Structure formats: structure tokens, C-alpha cells
Length: 222
Ligand SMILES: CC(C)(COP(=O)(O)OP(=O)(O)OC[C@H]1O[C@@H](n2cnc3c(N)ncnc32)[C@H](O)[C@@H]1OP(=O)(O)O)[C@@H](O)C(=O)NCCC(=O)NCCS
Image (tube, rainbow, N blue to C red; front, side, top):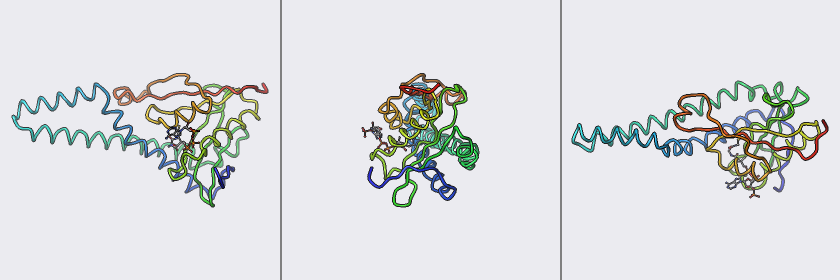
């Protein structure tokens, strides 16, 4: 991890932070589409549409066209859901990083900087569901800088911060399609606590689950 420095966020990092986060999230669109296509319910639906149109029209063209349109509509829907999620994150905290993460004493936002550019981000704040835990958020590393241990260093930074402030541990949420992130957290000693569906009907239908991970710190000051 040569010449990469982990430091606190500064106001001039804002645009680069947004870019690293947005690109990191957008890359989950293709795997999410694949995840949806692998669901038996979706495959059954597409199969039924295909067979029904083939039988009624006696032509291969109409069912092929219909399936193509359905796949394109599905891709657009996944795209829309991710764009919406990114927008919500920007409005919720990424457009107010100073107020959300740097003003409160028990929260923080760090960037990984390489050659004057932001190449990674991570943040934390007290977890809403358990006041003994900090929640790790906004973990992302630029594609060009992956596999160099930057995310591991960002994870350690959050764990040290939690330890110094007497938290029992760190928790976080990731999704079923974020397999690199799952490997990272498991590598860093996080334990999978539970896997659950988000309330939206579309997420339930497509089995798009979230995973909660927890890292219990060896010693704590409570
Ligand atoms: C997940 C992510 C942050 C990892 O960043 P990174 O800097 O490449 O990770 P590191 O180099 O520190 O790797 C840490 C460990 O994670 C695991 N890992 C990370 N990427 C992996 C991959 N593509 N394949 C297998 N294991 C991987 C490995 O165990 C690795 O340790 P090792 O190299 O000693 O085996 C990065 O892929 C990313 O930004 N993804 C998009 C955004 C995202 O999903 N964020 C998580 C939000 S919850």
C-alpha cells in the first residue's frame, strides 16, 4: 500500500468523495441484474411469457422481442433503484459530511489519498440499533487502486477509532451482491450476524437481501 495516506476528510475532497462512492455503488448494477435473473420466480415468469407468446403467435419473433423488452425494462429498473439509493445517500449525509461525521465527537469520515487524489473512503457513526456499536459506512475504493490493502487499512482505522472511544465493536450492512465487500469484512474478522430482506416488495420478490456484519473488539473501555 505504498504512498497511500489515510486522513480525515476535508471540504475540498467533496467532489472526489462523491465520485468514488457513486462509481463504487454503480458497479453493483450488472451483478444485481444477474442476481435477479438467477431467481427461479423470474425465470419461471420469463419462461411462461415466452411459451404463451410462442403458442399464441406461432412465431418466434414476438416472444424473443417481448423477452428482450422485459430484460431491458428490468435493467432500467435496477438502474433506477441504484440511482435512487445513491441520491438518498448524498442527501442524507454525503452532501453534509462535515456536519454528519466530523462535528459530532463519536463519528468520523476518512479518505485514502494517493498522489493528491482521493482513492478510498470510509465513515462511521454510532449505530442506531445498538449504542455500544459504531456503524461503518461509505466504504469504497477506486477500481484502479483495488487489491492493495486500502480497504483493509480503512477498516482498521474505524476499528481503532471505535476501540479508542470505548465502543464494544463495529457493525455494518452490505448486500448479497457485494461479494468483494463480504470477503473483505470476513477477512477482517467480522461475523455475519443476520441476512434479511429490505421491506420493498421488489426486493422481496427478487430475494435481494442485506447482510449485517459485526466485529466485536477484543477489549473495550465500558
Ligand atoms: C470492497 C472494496 C472496498 C475492497 O477494496 P480493496 O481496497 O480492493 O480491498 P483490499 O485490497 O484491502 O482487500 C481486502 C481483502 O478483501 C478481500 N477482497 C477484496 N476484493 C476481493 C476480490 N475481488 N476477490 C477476492 N477477495 C477480495 C480479500 O480477502 C482481501 O484481502 P487479501 O488481499 O489479503 O486476500 C472494493 O472492492 C470496493 O470499493 N467495492 C465497491 C464498493 C463496495 O461494495 N463497498 C462496500 C460497501 S458495504
